[in-house]
Length: 102
Length: 135
Image: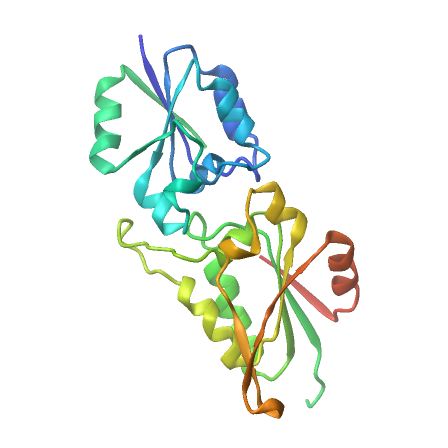
């Protein structure tokens, strides 16, 4: 049973990402969307939340949200995959369930 | 009515995810049009508002990031960015837009509007204000 988690809030403003990652089972996927993409920046104080969990959970960011916020893909934590809208659809189809963390 | 007050706009939210950043910009431009002494503060997630290279075509919404570069034309010369907020987010001044104002007393020389300040310096800036508007 695989699960896709989406997080749409910045980890620097709320504890949503930490809460989600702590409850995401091994083998699940986490997609960062909207303000959630800020948490994927390398060298940030919250980067460790993602880096520590990467062995068990796959991380994705939504490309158009990254671009809108002026973040260069080179600034993202290594190993995070950038997906477009059709990639988002694919993730929802390939997982049995979707949980939105608000 | 000729009293000039010191207005400070305190921005603490990321752009695009919520409407706060855009609303703040609109109110800032109103204040500036009334010839008030305006300054802007960007702290916490508000520092993301000044990121350069924003491209919203994929989202299909208006990109208001270029509007910040017009602030100088409205005589807004004081834009304070909190150093600690930048560092915590893995950002430096280079990640932000280069915002300037023109000094008419020096043959319209372009001068930097953005000042990176520590939280203690920010406390001083806020202390000096007549009005603080929070977004």
